[in-house]
Length: 124
Image 1 (spheres, rainbow, N blue to C red):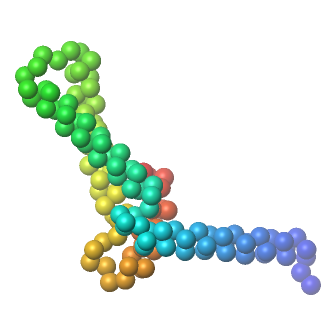
Image 2: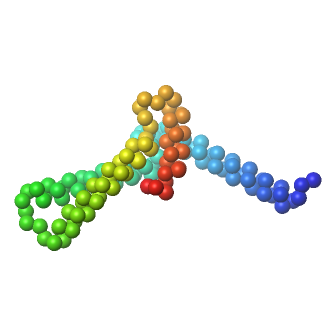
């Protein structure tokens, strides 16, 4: 017979594996059924990135209109340049976290998106 502590450890590992499997299946189903072909978190990030891009464009238009800018506005322009760079990097990552239209199997593609989202959550 096995030691009781070993049995408890084995049962705990099995429960953890089943829990992760259920989360993976649920996440894959949510991606497959979503309107935007990605998780809700990635969709929200996509909307935020788009809003930042629109705000940056507005600031650039104000600068190009020939208005005299204050020191604070000049600092904002410096931040806009940095935000543009971050928006570009985030856009690349977000695009990899969406279902590709050319995929053969929507279920397999949904599983890929869920897995990559899970692995890149810290990077985002």
